[in-house]
Image 1 (cartoon, one colour):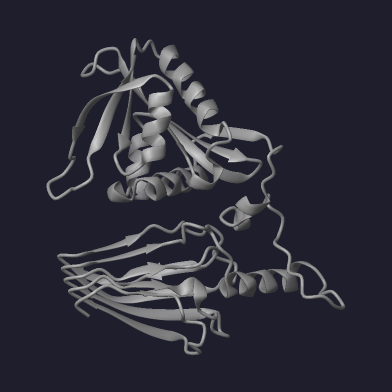
Image 2 (cartoon, helix red, strand yellow; image 1 turned 90 degrees about the vertical axis):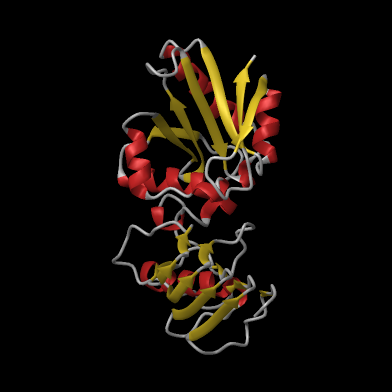
Length: 305
């Protein structure tokens, strides 16, 4: 209370419950370092009172927020599971956000955890006979949507880049995940994304079956004349491989096919990789602005010279 702390040493915590309080402070609880309860379920009770309780949850686990809010917000930045018949490790988050926020997100470094090992062992027991000896654990096939979140470690450089339109629930979830991870200050709901598919051209990109990025083309309209906005986003672990350029060039071609004469893009100032990418591809800055009252990080509009 009244201060910030990051807690990663939860390995000795043997209980299936955990309490977290933020009162005039912003504690960070990194659950990736915690031993998974034998039941595979953990209940976190978080109270954010004039402060934020930030929860970093392991990849591959179901997250069930059940928090109330009073002048605060509960932001789930994890990707929703689409296979409810699976028995996954589960993290339930109760409590309340009172003049504070409770954001939930995956670790930026996608590290492994005992939770992931719990899931691997559960999958192995259902899909293959146990080996006679040896401690090695195996992920299920990367082609399964089950492993898309963790399978990026196994996507080789020779995997084919596959791009598809955002036109079903799976692709809507994937586009939302990339957007919210890269633009955490402008989190979109699934309904928000669905609404955008009606007016924009949106695609998601995969290396094999592993999600790597997404694109958006905002076409010319009666309001903006012949101007189209082109946005290409690549997850951090897949940058500097030429994927961004391939996505950008594809989106640029789509904008030209819509008779766009002026090409613009927009980058959040907290994304230096995105700003550098735009400048390297010939965009020049037009203006910086705050989208909403209370925002502190500006958006940057750029135009292709």
